[in-house]
View 1 (cartoon, rainbow, N blue to C red):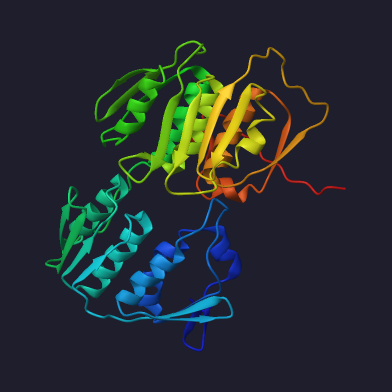
View 2: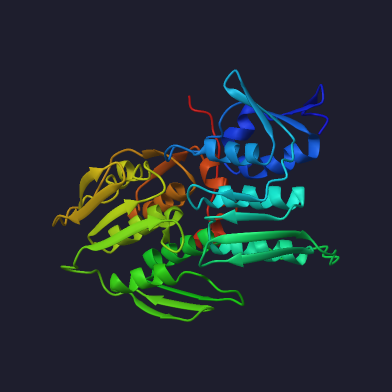
Length: 361
C-alpha cells in the first residue's frame, strides 16, 4: 500500500497492467478499499484483439464511480449509486464478475441481467453464498438477483476448484503425446460441449459428470471437415481454441474455425506452419479460418534453431505441446505470457521442463 499510495491516491504501475489482464477484475475492490485509484492506461496482457474496457468502466460508472481520463489513463473514485438493476450488453465473464463484486460491496438489492453462465461464475456465486450473502441465480434467464447480506456464516477458508483451462491443456497434451487422456474428480468438469465436439472428430469418449476417458484413433484419413465455433458458454471456450487447433492439426482433421469473442486468435498459425508442412490455410475473415491438409511425407528440418515468441497464455501452451512433438530445437522468448497462467509446467504438460537464461552476445 505504502509503495503505491501518494496524495490519497493509489497508483498502479505500467508493468503491472501489462502483465495481467485480470487487473481489471480486481479494480472495483481496490477502488472500494482505498477510495481513489489511478490506472495509467488500458490493460493489455496480450494481443488477441480489442479489449472491451469501456464495458467495465461503464459498469463502475453505473454503480456511482467517478471516472476521468488523464494522459491516456484513468482516475477512478469510489461511489455508490444505489442502483437496483443493471443489464450487460453481452454476457461478458469479467463484466459479470465486476457487477457481482460491486453488488456485494454496495450491499444493495440488485438484479444483474444478461450475465455469463460459465461454471466459474457458478463457483463465484456459491462462494459468496457461503459468506452469508443471499443470491438467486437464474441460468436460463441469465439473471442474478442479489439480495444483500443476511448473515455471517463464519467461513474462513474456501477451496478453489480446478482450473478448466489447465484441465483442457493437460487433455490436449496427453492426447497429442500419448493418444489417451483420463480424469476423475469430485467436482463436475462442465466440458460436455467440448467432449461432444471431440466425439464428432472421431475420438472415443467415455464420460459422466465427474469422469473423462478419451482415446484417440490412428491418424485420421479422409476425415470430413468439422466445424469449431468458439464463444461464450455453453459454446466451446475461446481460451481453448489454440489448444484444439494443435490437437486437430496433429491428427490431420480438417476444420472450419470461428471465434465469437476474439478477432485475433489465429496468430498461432504463423508459428505452427514451421512445425507442420501438411497444413493448408485459408483465412476467410478476421474471425473465420478453414484448415485442410496436403499430402507430404517430407519431414521439416532446419539447420538452425527456430525462435518463437510466446504470444499469449493459451497460444504459448499450445505451441509448446506442438513443438515437443516436432523434435526440433526451438528457443522461446516472452515466457511471461506462459507463466501468467501456467506457473507449474510439469503439472500442466506432464513433462519435466528445464528453464535457463542467458545474455545474447
